[in-house]
Figure 1 (cartoon, helix red, strand yellow):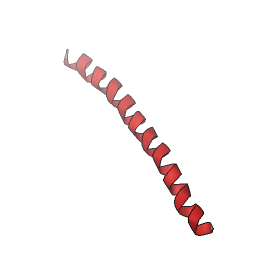
Figure 2 (tube, helix red, strand yellow):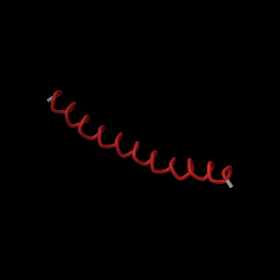
Figure 3 (cartoon, helix red, strand yellow):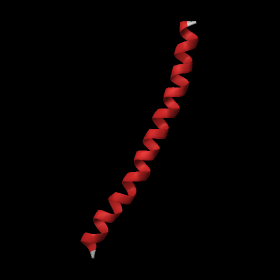
Figure 4 (tube, one colour):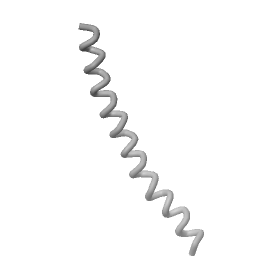
Length: 41
C-alpha cells in the first residue's frame, strides 16, 4: 500500500509544479520583454 501511494503522490505533485513553473516563466518573460523594449527605444 505504501509503495502504491509513494509513486501516486509524486505524479500528482509533478503536474501542478510544472504548471506553476511554466506560468512563472511566462509571467517573467512578459515583463522582461517589455522592459527590454523600453530600454531599446
